Image (cartoon, rainbow, N blue to C red; front, side, top):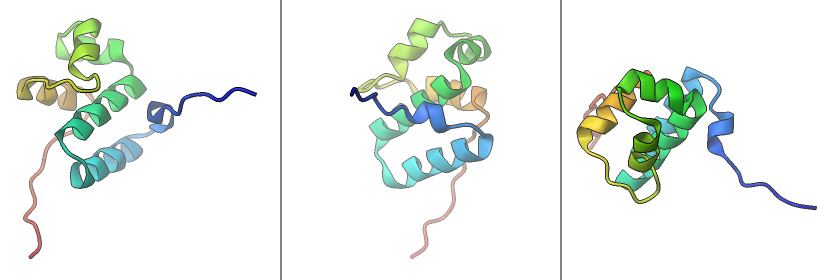
Length: 94
């Protein structure tokens, strides 16, 4: 009996699930985790659709959002907008 690799993108089925996932990673992860999470979300929505909305090519998106990548902030902002997200800053409780 074989096993298959777990793909979080297969479970990101709604905007609410996507937002909860990304917010959790933003709270608990580091910058690499955030880039990976945005990549998972882009895969869940569809890289072709994200490429069209960002004006980037699919290969460029895959490269920018791959494990260990360090994309430019402008790329992250384009992808966040395309996936329907935004960055919001809240004060940290003391």
